[in-house]
Image 1 (cartoon, rainbow, N blue to C red):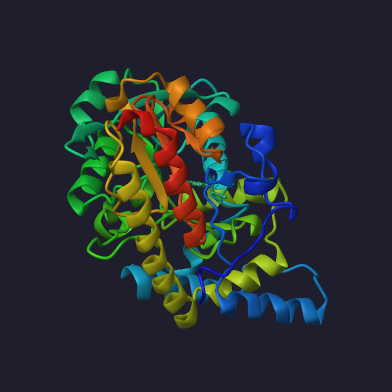
Image 2 (cartoon, rainbow, N blue to C red):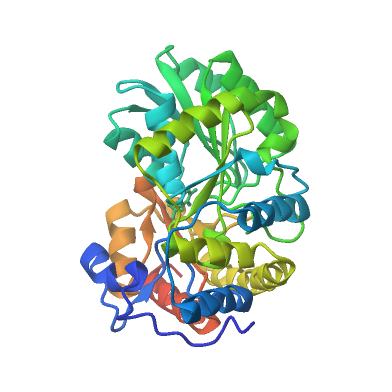
Length: 390
Ligand SMILES: Cc1ncc(COP(=O)(O)O)c(C=O)c1O
């Protein structure tokens, strides 16, 4: 488990590295790719071994969500999150972006409003728009250096045309891990407004010590008839390119509706993906995931120390995720200038805060799941790019 093993991803068809010049104008020759949420780590040895064995067999015929796969998912939720699921509840999708889009198609109609609490993972709004639904933004409130829900304010923004709520738990981009009380309040809000609830828990394994992730279903079982739970091994094990996630639907009616949609699209899971996830969701995978968090914690401290030393700049203390959410408001600079300094002076490709919706205007999101030397280099470059503020 060497998370500092140098890995040059340039020229490997990695979106993160090989698309960054086109998307951000930062050359991979001397730039650092710290935007989209995949890590630069080689995945767990048990996952590589499962893929290696499959490749050596060399036969890649059709597969299905077989019992070994479903049992591994069940084991992981129980062992890692204290959450008891029935294997019958699990459907697979082509990743969780796909699961969100499918949910919009199945549980809302064109023209409906869909509630999101912003700033939040920018693709929620993109998918709402692309499926012909409309975004109902409800901004998160600030309580010191963390976000909290303001459900009274959210309630005042609704006009009855909302049918669905997409909730991110843990929260991307702020890393907030919601408490049981907060999750129950979201369930009540959904019930009061008769909203289907899509709870995206993709980052649930990336939680730092001292904080415990609370699975939504564990504390809000009464919300099952309106809730879809989304989980995946993709972020945890850096296998997002295998395009496979789980939609966990305890309610039979919801499950039937989604299964019908998946059948109509002729969706089937990929052979390698299921082998890899089955191997990942194991005691060996769990040890690797724990070790990864220790490395991420070290990276986070280095990056945060450099960022917080820049006058007017503040990195939000993270409870989870490898995505630093950085507030530049105190610099007095415009969003364009902040972005230009990071792109042109520091030569780092990051995710621009404004894309995350209201509240993200003066933020930037930096992915620090990479080798330590890259994080140290990013810290040096950011310090230099804003040196005039000292
Ligand atoms: C909250 C959240 N949901 C979904 C996704 C997309 O997941 P996938 O790659 O499985 O489509 C991401 C990726 O960053 C994410 O952060």
